[in-house]
Length: 159
Image (tube, rainbow, N blue to C red; front, side, top):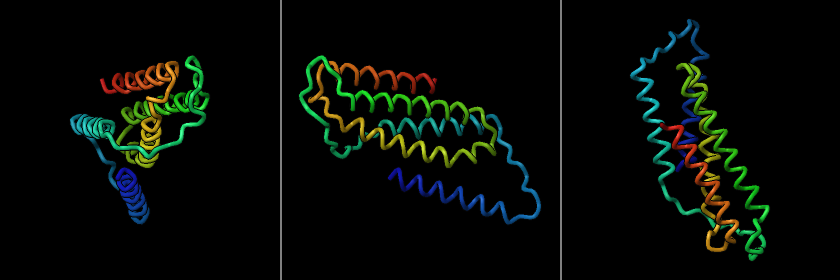
């Protein structure tokens, strides 16, 4: 479903760029009132929260080398969780840029937003695919630490 929405948004962006290229006179610059800007922010925030709240089952991924020592963290899990947190940081940086952008920049950022949301959906499925019941105590602790930190970052950005 998310990929369909991403494809539709990308198509709309392409069509708007093509349509703009065929006019001979400059198009009037769109103006967005502060109220409309706040409404767009609120709609985007609601969309992000609803996507985060959806609990879609993730395809099963094989976790490599089960049964590590209880005090060890598998490098694959650590690398994945570190890359997830790095992605969240990139996403938040994009949202800061989006929040301070003018109307024309917002429209041009739509394609990048679509790519980010596709990456987010992939990460969400992979995070859910790690079976917490098969994690060592050290892995579970690190998993919870990283996912909690990411959730706190996302919540603080909304506030």
